Length: 287
Ligand SMILES: Cc1cc2nc3c(=O)[nH]c(=O)nc-3n(C[C@H](O)[C@H](O)[C@H](O)COP(=O)(O)OP(=O)(O)OC[C@H]3O[C@@H](n4cnc5c(N)ncnc54)[C@H](O)[C@@H]3O)c2cc1C
Image (cartoon, rainbow, N blue to C red):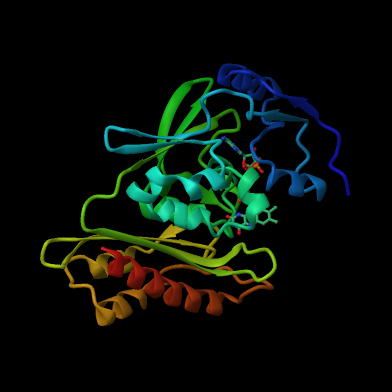
């Protein structure tokens, strides 16, 4: 089915884009790569009156380092994230996650900002965003504000962004020394979307004791979540097969996993534990 009729705008500046969002008062949508928005418009699950294409606004795409922080423009494609030598060196879990999104066509068009703003429970980047506690810059008619990933995701396909705000920039600190990370997912065999994904980042001290652990899970519940029980169980411990196994057993504690045609709630909880263990094992091996 084709999408319902809509107006199309390609503003040249962020201010113009915000003015259009304000004018349409919640009835317009930002268009980034279009790889999530256009399919749901064709299904008529979304019928915006206008699309505001931000692809022609200069400065929204690119990856740079600013004083030890990596800054990624919201319009940076998955392919650019996957192939960035700066990211491979400073925040390797990001290229690792981007590389397993869909297929090469999807990665050439889809953007990091679009994936995060869309907040699909089956999306890969939201779990990694939580593990890295990304700082997300939003710009709107009231100025700009920065949200942390752990407060950004509100519900299925719902974020803390207001309808007149645009996600412009993602900031992540470069990983400190003695840090390892890994992203593991159980993909849907047809679409490659994550049925469950686990992103792990661990930092050890000079004696091999875990100083900091972050685990983000996607696909388990309606929003990506931090596996706080796992994180707490690891800090202060030497990471080995036993401590990782014991901590990973807590991955689904306190969560209400989704159940659907792809995986029951019980199976998703099981996958959360298994994939947390795999991600932590690889992350600790990489320190
Ligand atoms: C066949 C197929 C397979 C896929 N497989 C995977 C997969 O395995 N893993 C995965 O994670 N994803 C997958 N995707 C989704 C893909 O990663 C999308 O690119 C991504 O989810 C959305 O990014 P986009 O740039 O295309 O955003 P769009 O589709 O343009 O936008 C998505 C939503 O976010 C909003 N939005 C976009 N950018 C901004 C912004 N800067 N500020 C505010 N709001 C914004 C839009 O208004 C819209 O509501 C797949 C898609 C397809 C078509």
